[in-house]
Amino acid sequence: MIGCRKLELDDPPPDLVIETDVTSKTTLGAYEAIAVPELWIYDSKKLRIYLLRDGHYIESDHSPNFPNIPLTQIIAATVERAWQVGTVQALKEF
Image (cartoon, rainbow, N blue to C red; front, side):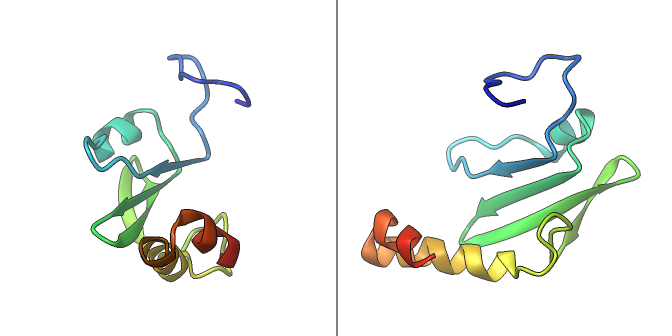
């Protein structure tokens, strides 16, 4: 999928989708329809991780792709830090 800018109907789903758009949101149902196994949504200062199980998403505290990393805490803290010191500095600290 490297270099792919748009999914076509016969493309395999991505392994992970990260949704950060604060102006318009894609519904969970849309991601369920293309069977994305893992979905992260950052909204209202919180990262939510969803895992596809039996065709529907369940919320999870951890990512099977990054099992030993407390992503929900790290991502929220990094975004908050970016508001304080700027994105470049927050990413350097990350």
